[in-house]
Image (cartoon, rainbow, N blue to C red):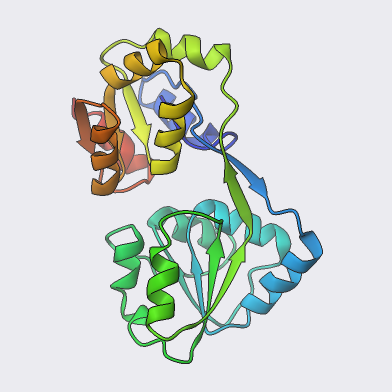
Length: 237
């Protein structure tokens, strides 16, 4: 069961099939481009001239690249390896932490001394706010460029029926706390109970904790949100 945002799971579904599995799509989020196009393009072009660029997700890369070519002399940082891979597809080399979350990025040498430096944080509204707070606390002249927004998914009877038919051996691939919370909020209770009976494969310790709080009893933690790591972890049980 793939819970990645609607329209972004095709490649992962293909890899599941290649491994002999049956992919089922249960999007926990939908992604939408920001609406103020002209102003946002100008903001993105300005951000590319800053000293440090921080991309928070592969989606941030995709929506930013739709606004302006990602040509920059800035030091570019990515929250995770998936984001770094997305940047490489646009010809941008980025540093990514081995611990693929906000805490890991804040441990990178490039984020230690930021006083007076122009830092652009490229992503979406919401989230934990840790990067925003810590970058500002370290003295960065912070610019936020919110190139997309996350909205709840549109789940219909096909999604619900697929969840109700899940065997206990099913794996639920989880890489977003917000997506998990949307599924808890929007699935009918019988479907949610069946989902919780499956094995949750989480991309981080924080998400493993969230899955436990959401009612999953069987949890496997992957090394990262990369498809290869999630599928490797899914094969453990």
